Image: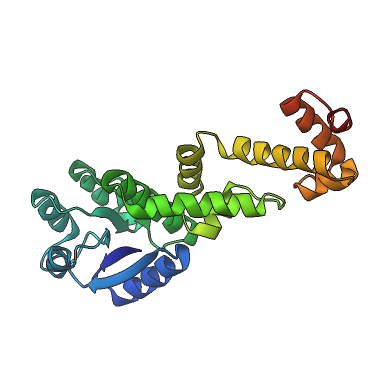
Length: 234
């Protein structure tokens, strides 16, 4: 589970972003909220959230001042700047503090999913989190169990609550192969088993390993084995 702190002086904005975060990625939970940068900084020091989503213009301590303090104190947290179009150029000043993630108001589900996915990927890479290994096991297990279905990276991203790029990297890291190659080789291996050990027709075997088009299955099978399914069976 990854924790998020929301820092914004507008309560309605915090409510909206909290809802979007909770809906975007199941592994991410909003664990705190602050109405200004001073409150936010204190909560970061005490609660150590994984990710901070912060507005720029706030009373007492604005977003840039809070971000600068975070960097000066070497607090281990991913930072996402929340801003409107009118504030975006101002918000870009955060780049000098190493901030690379931005969300524009109103926050959209796709953008927050991609942004949080990128943050989580960096956290996992930086900290070597156990959760990443668990995610790898879950993703590969899901593919191995659902290879007969029409599965693709975007579907896996939705299933596990991470960006498609991150899921692709997880599969590559775990198997040494791109997602499409791993899935195809898995399907062909299962097809070989069925051709050797059953009397099912080629069309039925194709369908049972995820190929509705028998002619396409024949081409892929020959590409990987050097033989057509019929030749392989003989």
